Structure formats: structure tokens, C-alpha cells
Image (cartoon, rainbow, N blue to C red):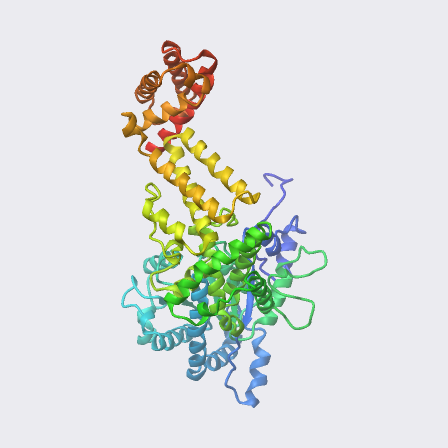
Length: 615
């Protein structure tokens, strides 16, 4: 009555009733629906995939119909809300689901499936059971198969059961019963992507309002439906690093309930279609995209094979780690040569196809098809990783962002010490780019894989030019122009591969000599940088003697040192003051008037770079 014309507005993630009776009665029709499909399209969540791995219930035929009739209506929420009416049916089903024989089968499958998922994707997994009794029994089965998962305290171990209880519960449950503070500490461990606690068993805890973005797989061995099911599977749809999607693994047969829940909570499509990432609703039987991914994975694999048509990489598939390592530079050289011959499109296509292949593999890694081609995928992963380290067309992929599949597969395929080192693979000692010694350059000159040698040199010189820019913007531009000119001549067929390698080696030697100019000139590094800036103008260099330019450079360096604070480049007044003082030095020292403005701009730019380097 205080605000008689007020409008009630509500936000809900999962309406409480399947038919939305309560929501619509109180608030009326929906104003807008932002559903899973739109969320995936916006990149706010990742797709969710489904995999059926049903473990049969060990039931006499005479009892199966009784449980089937009760199964569809059973969920844990109903168990709590209508305990009196449903206790008998729930207990009956719980007893069958939780038999020692069946849990042994579930545990054996979990161990294998979790291992495959972890190899391809890393991350955390959640197992949902019908009861606390089953959770504890399944834990015992799992640690019997994988003792290393067990921890003696809350601070260690890969596997935990999260549940409540009290002193009257069975003795064997007590190690898993924790107070709120202990459970919260374990929650923080589980949310930490780098913490070894990566497998959790729950009955109902952590299924709502719990976010662990690295969680990518949820195993469901419990009757669930409606908004409770949607909230549970949403645990795996959070965006995290290179996570391509979440996976729901069904051990009990929730497919129809999941289909119904998706139809209820994903309804903004005008045709009533469910998101293709989750389910194909075009048939009576649910058909989830995990199995379509296998087809996509094979398709991308064929594209990657096509990129290496004419190159034999069998030794990588069957050889020792050292033999596999020998294949890497040969494969890089082959692809770089093809790329050069075919208009610089081959590497781009390969990188795109390899990225798609790895994403599909990460999601479908538990399938037999993925396991059969794992070593071949490792080969393409290795080459992708190696090319991304030397190519300037690596699709924006940085070393730290490489797919987890690359890190895992390459680690195992190449050597125990980790991801392939492109220099070691090419038979070279990894150089200090600030030195580029004659011995290293001679090794590059003698490499049999000329195309790879060229790419390595380009990578090293580009890195050195970037480093030089911090100390001398003029020198870095000169070297960059020379490098680009040589590469352009190579692309225009004016230089053969061997000739451009020689040209780049000469440039590397010139850059190395330039790094010691300060000693020869008797100047500090920042003074040399300003000396280069002052000499950039041909007219100034022709009019003024070299000693005069040195004196001006040293005075400019002193002016910059004495009149710049930590944050001077971020304050407009400080920048203006420095410009005035630099102009005053140039006028007083007789620097050509028509070149003073351009020299001042270059000096301020150099001062900013030096400040950034020293901050």
C-alpha cells in the first residue's frame, strides 16, 4: 500500500516449478529470457556435452518394473519434501544402485575415464551419488584402485567426500564428516585450479551456488530432474582458460530427464530447438553432440594429415622419445617450405585445423576413437606448439595459452622434461639473443633444414629488435627496416633461401656489434640512445661534428635523468616541462632549427621507453 503502483520484477535462473506456475502467477509473463544458448553465443559460458556410460542395475526381472515406475518421480528434493511417501521407493532404488558389485563397476570406469579426461584436459571433476552411504562406499572403491588419491589430512589428497553428518552416523563415515570451516577450506582447495584436490564426491552439497571454473566433468549416478538437474550440470559450464566445454557423464539413465529440463529452461529459440552444443532434439531419442564431436575430430585430423601429405612421420608414432624429437625439425621444415611455395596459407590452415582438432580431442578423449589416434594427435600438437614459438602467424596463441592437450600430449610423446624446445629439436644450443655468438650463427648456417633455419633466425632477430627498442628506438627501427627488406626480397624471389640466411646472419652480427657501441663511443647506454635520436636527421649529421652530437646527447641525458619522476610520463605538465628543457638544450647547442621539433619528439619517445624499461 505504501507504493500502490509498484511493479514487481524478479530475476530467476531456474524457475521452481517445471510448468512455472508460481513464477507466472506472481510476476506474470517473462520480460526477457537469457538462456544457455545465448550465454554460450556470448562467451559467458561454455557448451555442455553429454556422455552415456550406463552401469546396469543388478535386478531380478520381477522387481525391475516396480523400480522403473518409481524412478521417474524420484529426486532428492522430493525425498526431502515428501519423505514419508517416498522413503520406501528411494531406499529400494538406493540399495540397488549402491550394491558392492555395481559400485565396483562404476569405480573401475571412473578411474579409466578420469585418467583420459585429465590427460587431455586437466581440471577438476565432481561425482554425484544418491546417498552418503554410496558416497563413502564409492570413495573406498576408488582409493582401493588408486591409493595415491587418498590423503591423510584435509590438506592433501586428490579425492574427497563432501557431506554433513553427526556422531551418530556409522563409524566408517566419520572421516568424511567435517564442520563448516573444514568444508570451506576444502572448497577453496577445490576452486584452486593448481591444487591437487581434483576429484570430489557429493550427494547434494556443492550442486548449487558453488563455482569452480576449472571443474569440467560431472559424473551423475543419482536420479535428478528439473531445476535441480540444471543447477547441477551448470557446475561445469564456467569459462576457464582453454576449457572447450563441460561434460555430463550419466551412469544411471537421466537422458530423458535432461532432455525435458533443457526443453523447459532453454526456450528462446523460436522453433523450440535445443542448443546444438547440448542436444539434438530432432529425434525421439536424445542424441548428444559428444558423439558428433568424434566425427569432427576425425575430419580435422584428416585436414592435418593433408597438410603433411608427402611427409613420413611414422618414426614419431613408433619411435623412442629421442627419435620423435628428431622428426620435429624435419616436419617444421617441410611445412614451412610448403607454406612458402603455396602463398603463405599452409601454416595458417594447419594452425586452425590443429587448434580445432585439439579442442575436439579434449572433449572426446574418453572415446575409443580418440584413444586410437592419440599418438597422431600428439604429433600435430607438437608441431603446432613448435611453430607457435617461431611463427609470426600463430593465430595469437601465446606459449602460456597453449591448449592443455598440447602440454599433456607433447610431454608424454617427446620427453619427460617437457614441451619441445625448438632449438634443441633443431640440434642447436638455445642462444642468448643479446649475444648471438658466431658459433651459434655458424650452427644455423650449417642446418640441413634451411626453411626452419630461416624461421628461427627471423624469430630471434625480431625478439632482439623488440629488446633493442627499449634502449634505442632509432636502432630498432633501422634493424627492423633491414629485416623486413630482406624478407620482402625473399618473398619476391629476389633471394634464395641460402642467400637470405646469409643476409640475416650478417644482420645478426651487425646487431651484436651495435650492442657494444657505448663502450667504443665512451658513452652510457641512455646517452647512446639520445645520440642516435639526434643523428637521425641527415642534415643535423652533416652540419654538426660527431663530438658536438655526443655533447648534446650527454646533456639531454642529464636533463632527462634530473627532471623525470617515476610517473612523469603519465602527467601532462611534467611531459610539457621536459619538452621545453630539451628544446632549450638543442637551441643553446646550435642544433639545426628546422630539425629541433622532430628531434624533440624522438627524444621524448626514447625517454618514455627508457622509463618503462627502468620502472
